Image (cartoon, rainbow, N blue to C red):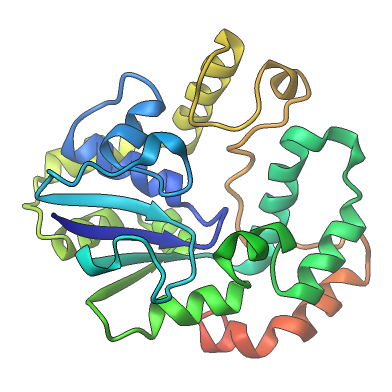
Length: 253
């Protein structure tokens, strides 16, 4: 079996990419858990790998190190980056799925800035944003394709086509268009809403209680956001902390 990694820092669009690939390769999933059956998540129990498959797309947030599970089975990797300021805001929303009003936004933002990422993610082996980006985008262990949340949002069909070609899949333009249509942000968000309202197991964190608070796993899907609404000083603090690494990893403009 050969593994094609879908590697990203958390809240960078990995779930979106999995929906796009599922819709293209296998059609519309019956529910969100079908993503874990077809494209396992290394960090979820349902994501255990079936090693009998010839080729398997696998999601990971881990930093690339010698201890990465299934490293010896790696064929190639698709790396999805996102501007860390948008990740910060999306991570804050993610934390609120379970913490509700107990989360202090200013404290969360300053800790993210000081540590270079969410401390919980760092402890889980995902590293800082910079560590993660460097480990995956500079490796020469195997072929790597780098895309970004921003590029996928700007031209979803183009980026999906590029990912498929990189993975060795034949291109059917009608299927590309259909996959893009079915993976629209608001369509995915409606799947989340319905599954949370129904209750039971779901790919999306949070349940009926978070739905009642309008706290969604798929929150806004926004880019180019500011931290000014949290604290007027945070944008300057963030830019000072991340400026060099943003320029190094394609966000210098």
